[in-house]
Length: 404
Image (cartoon, rainbow, N blue to C red):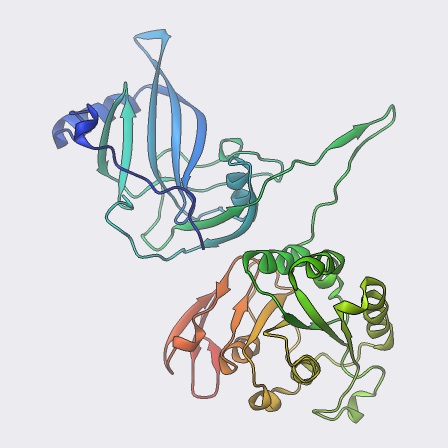
């Protein structure tokens, strides 16, 4: 995860000799300010990971209601209520698009992070005081363009501990949806992406992978996970993005009782060099040739098929259904390349299928969700734990087990 702006503390030789005040005087000044009626006028992101914001306020003194004064404070954001919608608002305030966000964000603090301090400025007089979080309990709507458009708790009031930071990553340029107005209706010209579309496209855009071989589950309700395949194809023509697709449907219409591990079938491969029409036709054949059947699927067979048919593919990605455990995990030791597992159909506050973690870990690969990239699985030892999304997982001698 990347950061946008590093927070720099002003130096004494800047002319602001009163930057650091005595504790007594500082506390007195802050107490006086916080008794004024105040209105938040702007919230600015000053650092993305961990998320740090500067809050500008207009103060009205009860002794002189017509006199307005201005005051700002900069500090960290706590994760309560801070969901993807809030993260999008934070990125839009910078005219950027959200790439990922994480709650319970962990990082190694540096001396300039001020992670346990808040930075105040009043009448051009800055000072630093001990303070962890400035805002908590967010509630944002999908049209929020700034965190100031959201509802949140009172300044400095929170029930947060130091493991409750938020991290975001923003990139690109945010282009707001345009509207066209007629006498009878107003329509938005862009359709919001589904969570599944955002997951796959977001993961791919966060990484500089090239020469990809993609094994894609096309059974059941996985349509959103490959809905933007035309965009992947466009990228493939310019930077060798994807070389090869293997679409699998778990055995075409083979009865469940007749499915044989390792030769279940229902896998359809195509090179991107054959053109978008051939890719889409192959995808459609794979979809329509399947008949659903039982829940387990032939993921590992499809991964092996991809590696065998595209030996020049350097990055093997597996777009997997979180709700379906692979039937053929016994074949995993035959996989010779690291597998990058992209978890699709992962609903909010649900758990990652621990067998997908096993695929990533046992092949020396990685696991990716809408909000996170888990790329350190290889460093784990038996007994170690790792938090992925809403779940806490422990590595055992046979694989991962969710323990919370």
